[in-house]
Length: 319
Image (cartoon, rainbow, N blue to C red; front, top):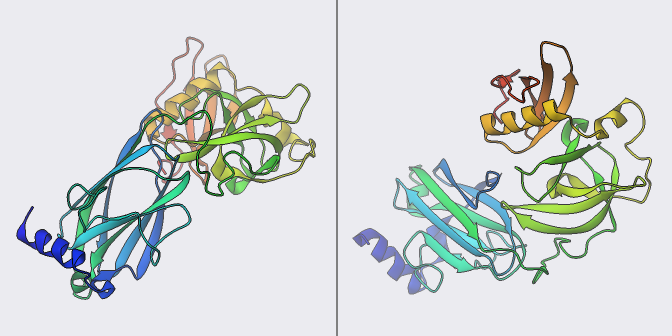
């Protein structure tokens, strides 16, 4: 540990005034892990009084590890429990070594509650007032299997919540219903914007909330949907399922599935939805929406299961 960091740790342990910490201009960024992984590394920067609030979801009993590698040694982070943030008491201050901080700018702890955690990265006020810049890498991992029953559910509707959800996607697009709570799981079907589904319980995987739901048709289809796009709904089975949009609830065919997989791999983004599929003898043209804005990507799928390399149809396709 270098001398500057050691001095700061001693100062904090002795009750250094809160004015040392600068977290006045905050922006928020949602953290997502790639499908099938348990962690990610973020490269970012802050200037002066700017701070970044990274939010991610996990369950009680899981182990979260965080490591910050800043270019400016006056940069630290706090970890906040669900429902807490800057101004509240933190679970840990990465500038003060302790039970869950084995070294400065490292966090290693078993999480006490289920819900959305916040990691706040900031610079000390002495550096912030000089408008100093800090470029950094923030590595986050969450390990440990979720238990059969959610423990210490912190008002996130993991075990309870409404009886019915309604799909609420940006731009009125469709929502993938997957075979498992993972962005890499097979797409069982797609749900229309405004469609109601029955809530069968939610869990945290890949740093986000996934909900097991069932469509209200008879017979219904069960699967897992990203909780970001679900709001409280009703038992009306007709909502969101009339008109031309109802065609979107058909099972994606082999060509569509192949392109959905190819676009996910190309972009590294598991938030992909089928927008359209046009068959021809030469190959099936599939248009896939990527990310919250459903930026369009094009893919051609062939009878043997192969595809062309996906191509973005806008400059935002990788978002």
